[in-house]
Image (cartoon, rainbow, N blue to C red):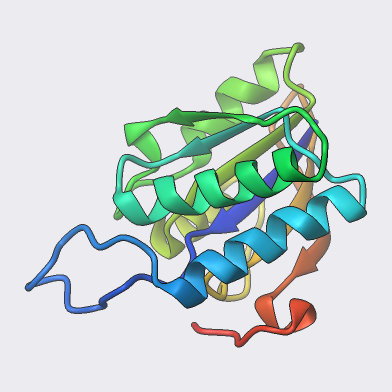
Length: 165
């Protein structure tokens, strides 16, 4: 199974005390759209995108899905999963998806902490490098044990944008 792990794009605001659920900025929309375009150009198209309930992950997933559709491909379904929200972990979702043989290319749009926590406990002794906002990492996940191996990564600067960590 191929899993596309994507950190949400740049939020409108990082003052979460003032706005705990900001959407993505114009720069974030551009970065997410560029990522969707890159996915179509490189035959890395998910059939479904799971996103946390937070606005910034939902908008990131929708921008990616729309870019894929605008390139002439079927628009991936965007599904909400509360287990991959802030301060959570993507582990349970990856393990569940690995058991579902109908899933072959799945995108997960989440938050830095949820991504790091999930990948850390999935059979790796050291945590993954920090994720930039709107960064994509492609993993090959073994179905029998959800063990993963990173295959490729794309950061916004690869697509003409700015990397924000």
